[in-house]
Image 1 (cartoon, rainbow, N blue to C red):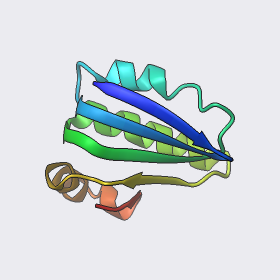
Image 2 (cartoon, rainbow, N blue to C red):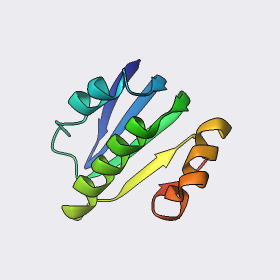
Image 3 (cartoon, rainbow, N blue to C red):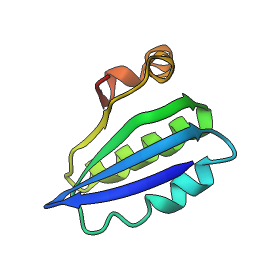
Image 4 (cartoon, rainbow, N blue to C red):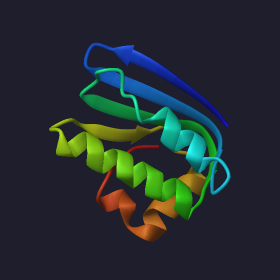
Length: 99
């Protein structure tokens, strides 16, 4: 998995490529601990072809951390297979997710 962070003002975009699963979720967790002073976070999932329950947990944990501090959180460029997981679990109704 590859994770790239790009800051623009008070918004941090985190682009993820690869699978976000049990094996890679610790790497994702570590990468998103430091938000580089950003208030808002955009996850770019354009390169994520698969997400497991471990990946969902890390995504929701990041969402809760960002919004608890008054920030905005969104997930963008979600691939159809990953969107199916968000829809099946109901997270598409809780998170700002766009394909």
